[in-house]
Amino acid sequence: MMRRLLILAILLCGLEATAQERQIAMDFMGFSADGEHFVVKRYDHHVGWGISVRSLADGTQVREHLYTSAEEKQTLARVKRRHKLQEGTGPRSPDERYVALGAQNGDQFDILIMRKPLIGRFQEIPLRSADTPQRGEAILKKAAWSPDGRHLVVILNEKTSGLGAWERDTVYAYRFRPWDVTWFRAEEKEEKKENDQ
Image (cartoon, rainbow, N blue to C red; front, side):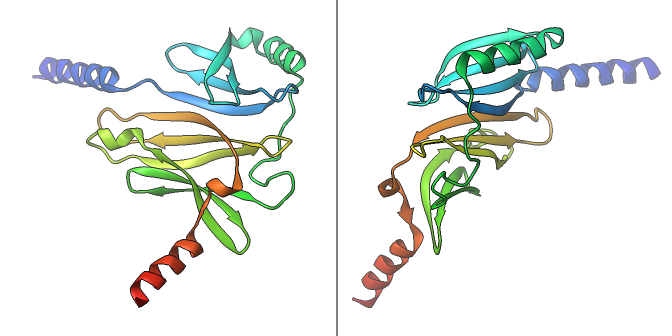
């Protein structure tokens, strides 16, 4: 009986391990001085540590530097030196007019922009967990404006729980134009006009 329980426990552990998706964690490092790239430090539990250089135009990876823990300091210093990294301004734009926020909205995640007293939706990101049996939870892990205020980089953390649970960071880069923001108060005024007619 004890042997059967042990075999069952091993099988269940193996099932959960195979059901788990790839887990990826990312940390924002900075923007390149040429204004064309940004850099994130990434940990992939299948591959290990790496530094991903990405295009500001669309967020796609253009170069990757893999390293071991023994090579970390040297690799980070080399990448910082090569790209002359600038930190960016965090969630507040360089001119301090806008603040980037985020909120889960059902099966999507909204990137919101606040310009006091207004708040508006800038981007809608479909959640990966929308296609899975478990409902996922997402948070805005990082928002960073480029030093010139023309681009916004966000890192979204999404995770599920239960059998086959996974957690993953995904990075997105956007060209920021104020007219791409749908301000909520403007929407409310339009709805009120329609209801009054």
